[in-house]
Length: 163
Image (cartoon, rainbow, N blue to C red):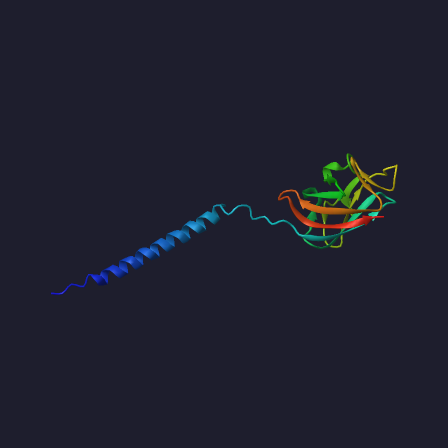
């Protein structure tokens, strides 16, 4: 009588390999479901343009498209040369006069077609805008960035000349 033991080896190995693959897939699914993948909140993205208004000592940020932006969840970084400053809604009455939706001051959200205003004060000694200790002198290029405070990632950025 002839025995064929070799036939039994292949199905056992096949079953074991399939079992290992199923265990690996289950571990990956469990890790993602359990939050191991980390925070999945996305940073809002929007396009803004900035128009300076030296008569009112203000910067008008117009929302041109993208996600609605909650003003309380952003910070605006302004830079003139090596001088840099950051403004948030907490700076109202401290480093700025206004940081609000231009069309509806009671709304803390800016959507496409809306704008928000950052209003500073008269520097007194020259043409420009003061935001507390941050002075933006006239006739200079100003770099700006809007950051999401939670992720500290850029939502929008650009530059303008303060004339």
